[in-house]
Image (cartoon, rainbow, N blue to C red; front, side, top):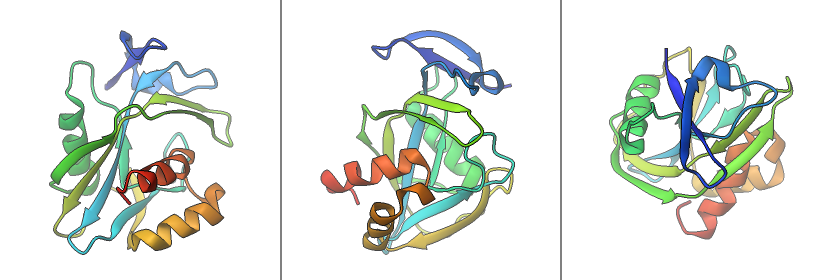
Length: 173
């Protein structure tokens, strides 16, 4: 059973809890990450969350997200999730939004409440998605994605809808 790291308001670790027990209607602040994967042509990989996911099932989102295990380096967790969820070996992995934080409530009432550093990486090849994590995936031109997220943010995960303009502002998308 995986655990997540619980955080104080200032981002310091204050404990751990089973991942399966964290996401409720009163989710405590905890550590997560997001990753945006580009191919060698500069297209961005977007994924649709599996229908069995507890939060935001079936919603289109960034390449992948996850939670580092307690005492696991975040970059190691990003690489682990990229390999496990998408079968990808990430090149040029970089932290680009170290202080991103959000809180959102999905249609079922489950809350996400995370400090969620954002990473980018490059791959040479297509994913091999785990169907328990990813229902569909697609490569998309970055400008097209920026445009559609701006026009219809409700069609995407709330974290991606917030992250895309931030990534655009720093020149990462």
